[in-house]
Length: 256
Image 1 (cartoon, helix red, strand yellow):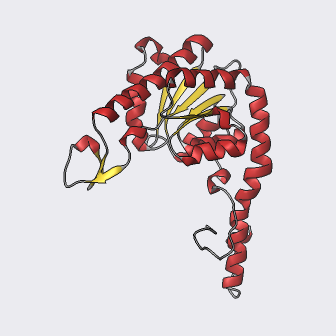
Image 2 (spheres, rainbow, N blue to C red):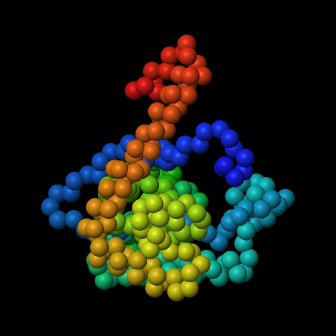
Image 3 (cartoon, helix red, strand yellow):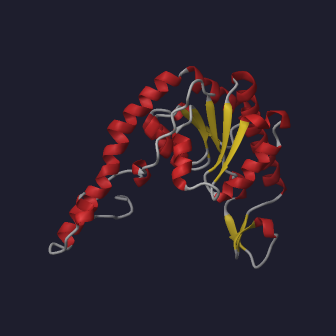
């Protein structure tokens, strides 16, 4: 911002989603299955482009259509297969239960494609959880109840952190690699166009399983000492600005 000529005060806080309140995960009675959450994104359909018309299934919101061609379709098939292989490996080798999470309605199609690429014999171990069918609070509670997470959604990382869920990322833009670097987990962030994606995802999953206790401690400490104080600053800074800009106004909601 300074390099672009901004001269006003610049304060670095963090995403308000860190303060999102949701019901605590239900405490299981007796033994429970280990649960792995997968939050995929279809990277290959972006960016959207303006067109007067196109296939209905490729329409994001008229007149915007997803990018799609033969190369993107092949890349999508490889991406879906990598997620499907990860889920199959986790179920067969570790006996986990998989939650296939569409954080946004846009993610539902890739979740359905991943489910379709998995051996039907394993479907009884998979719970599809789709935005639009669940409330945001429900999805957050599900995220915080995970034992492990592999995510392509930034907010799945942020919202699961309150319960220190061990995790790895398959990323497309700067948000996930940035927050993983702040967490000290840059080695667990995998670029979406990396060669050998299937192996990389399975290796990342095996790493978080093997180092789960350490990761929980590190994520919990970073969440407590770094992210939450910066999140609380959002309200404090807004309160201070409003008090200075409108000194005669009452701003009780910002003072609570």
